[in-house]
Length: 260
Image (cartoon, rainbow, N blue to C red):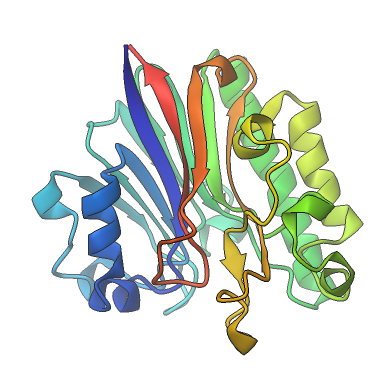
């Protein structure tokens, strides 16, 4: 048996992360088999010196129509059987949020779930995205596919997933209606790999506000996930958060999956 390392990272501006050397160092060190990047805030012509090409990765982009906003990238060492860009729904696809790649044993999706901010309209948009995404992965699963979906979900699920829950409730990202969608994914047969394998792990966060040195003090949130359908979970050998990787206000998360 062999294993595949599958990682997700909200890079919050790919060009800056590359320029600072963080992205290339991470890719060279971790060498994921598949990597999903969110909030790249760039288009292919703006990243001419791709640091992944020399390492043997293929790349697929889903940039947002709005310049300098959102956007996703999928990197893979193995040539996928098929790649799909977006969910097929214009209101979401215009913001560059989802890339899907089919491999022989599983389908991988990288997704950048919307941030509701403080507006009611964006909250409605965010919850509608959750519903559309769940319908999509349920369709894949009904067709007999194992699925791995990962990304910045923009919500902390449990109290253990946020350093200051009372403070978090004053904004979005930890509201009951947002957290209920993680419950919904779990109820429909998907598994939060990190929490499943490390149920009592505390102070394990993937995002930190940039102000007041919150990362240095580890005042953070766990809002980046790798989820799999429950039938695939027995093949997940490890789930991890790379809190020592810098270059963004998020850090990479990932799994090691038994293959072959």
